Length: 72
Image 1 (cartoon, rainbow, N blue to C red):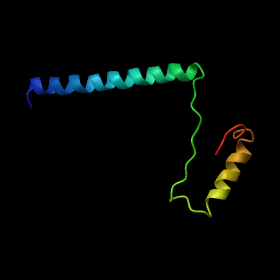
Image 2 (image 1 turned 45 degrees about the vertical axis):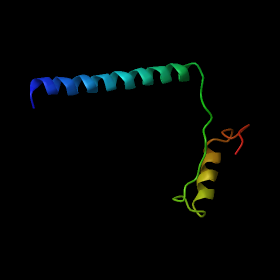
Image 3 (image 1 turned 90 degrees about the horizontal axis):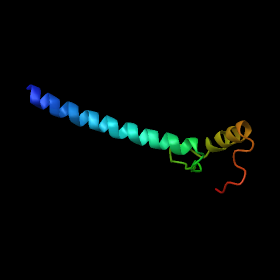
Image 4 (image 1 turned 135 degrees about the vertical axis):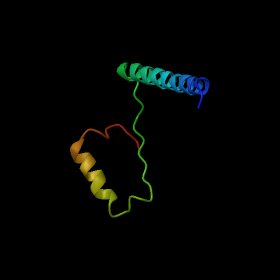
């Protein structure tokens, strides 16, 4: 691979890194100001009916006020 192509790939990669860094900074600033989205809960077919109740009970035990005011 010649130097020109390596430079092209490097520039492309660094632009992607810069874009991701900028997005992360924006999100960090948003979160530091308290703009937090509510956590959405979803269950996939991987979590079977026999496994779900213990998971929910553990969450509620660990976070007793974690569901206050939240809708399902």
